[in-house]
Image 1 (cartoon, helix red, strand yellow):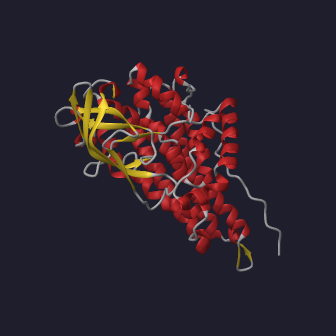
Image 2 (tube, helix red, strand yellow):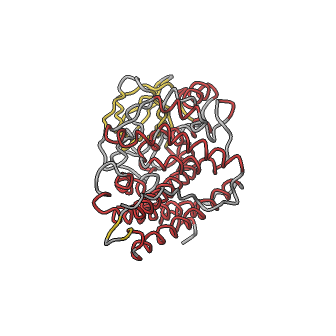
Image 3 (cartoon, helix red, strand yellow):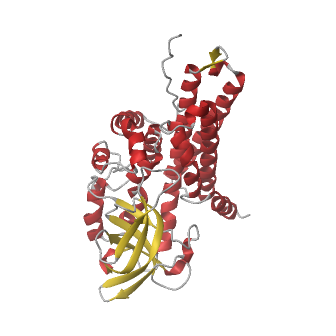
Length: 390
């Protein structure tokens, strides 16, 4: 038997946007993922969760703090640090861990942007240190991408709001300590929406766990609010100004999702190259067959094009631009790239790619959630077209 070839690591192409500090952070993240996540990813996926201590370990390497104000324990960072973090987390091949570990990146920005000083002091340091978990709750059983149609209500009663309704498909929904919740405090449409911070243990607040096609290691829940009293001091920003804060959140979320998808697609390519170099068929390595090499070339082509698009838009955001249409198109480009690469990876692995425990098998199950969460493909196309005046 010939010796098994040493595995290859497939890196992104050199980027003109990355500094020595970026590359040092990549090295830190890679060591963190290799030590703290990758050895346990398959077990955690099967168990449907990961230990809470992982949040504190993520804080120890500076992951949780990225992009939040230093005054509350954060680390000011440009978008490229977030891209690096998302793509290095993707190397574990377990998107559910990344989804819950980083749920604060969508739950906390409204607090950091518009919360009162007291609210910021109470919430931000604890979450950024990994001691508490934060989540965002917008989607409802009867309303997903149409944010302006939410029906969960919050009625002012003295020094409290009384919240009734429900939210669903909420990442970290089962164990989040702080949840930024979109509620209706005014009339119909986007002008009547506010954001409230709900907290674990509030009377009338309950949760139901959801079982999913993929992202098994990420706890996901439906949240139920039955006359939950929430202090008015937990209002984030001004009453009836929540829609603006929600929209402000989306660019960062979609850039992060796109980065993670491209990272997962690159992992599919890396896993397939290494399997094809080791696996022998018809007397020679699988990679010696032209049909397989063409699959790999097509995967690489789509990945590098998507990465370049991602980095260009991240640079535009750094310049203070707000390229909403392009970010919508990027998210679709990234999810379609992942879909293609995951399919070709599993197909190239054959039966070995269909068996639980393989990274490509886990990623294949996670394709659809990326094309739905953060803005479904169809919504992204329509929003991009409208932004471009079509």
